[in-house]
Length: 224
Ligand code: OGA
Ligand code: MN
Image 1 (cartoon, rainbow, N blue to C red):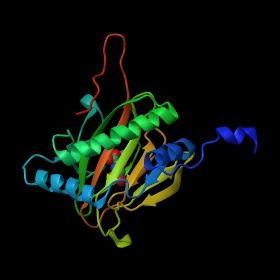
Image 2 (image 1 turned 180 degrees about the vertical axis):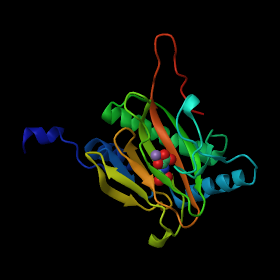
Image 3 (image 1 turned 60 degrees about the horizontal axis):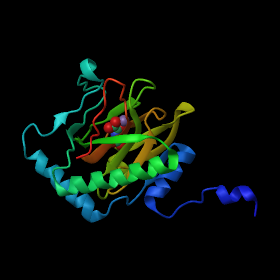
């Protein structure tokens, strides 16, 4: 056995380790059954509960700070930021914290914080090709999307279309938003879009961030 192979990482069998391994190798990871059907149902129940409350879901915007605006031509999803005040969302945040620990241990990413929102794409809605973080202008390092849709058919559209970082016009993969699947990708490298969904599409989108503390200001961590 070559000496070097002792230090090579073998494909792991644990899902968090597999995600770290795939992100390290290719900058992204797709993990079916990241959460169980019971956990999907529990998150959907929270989501449906929110939809009973007027204003709980807001039209998503684009841009940051003063540049923030809603733009129906770019994206048409409705969102609600997750604060972990329900058991299912707390469980989800705990799981993402475990993933954060694994990513930091394996890839030394210095991930500090995670923020996430429910997203509802009504029938016909899309999110045009975009990138989640521009280099040097954001503390978002890794994007995550967890899907909550059972029996998604090819004719339902609504795939996450991800482009090759080295060839941004070349499609890398189309991912149907199937219940329980988690996708993770480097926020600054991957252009992506949500193709028009022909039926309502439920998901949780999130971002691992690095600390942007300066000597005069310390970011509070964002865990609940
Ligand atoms: C986003 C996004 C992709 C998806 O919310 O920024 O790109 O598949 N979502 O929902
Ligand atoms: Mn995005």
